[in-house]
Amino acid sequence: MKVTVAALLSVRRILGWSQKEIIFPGGTLADLLKQIEAPEFGNLYNLLIQTDGTPNPKYRFALNQQIVDKPVLQTPIKEGDRLVAMDALHIPSLTC
Image (cartoon, rainbow, N blue to C red; front, side):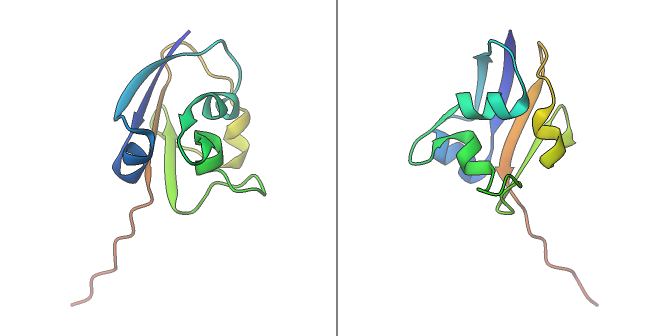
């Protein structure tokens, strides 16, 4: 099946591309992340997920426009799904 993966900000620099259509044999979101090569990290799972299985707070990623958290890692991937990975954006609060 085909899945679209988009990489923004430093994730794009790490992967070396901004968007790819991935041929994925099937499985969960965690399986998909493990299939995507990330130089220096082995794969995208190692970059985005901490050793305790929780998302790395330095990054955010969304599957079909839904922010991903730990339980969602076991979500089955379907044909046409779209994954977006990027840095967590920290916007300071504005005071007047």
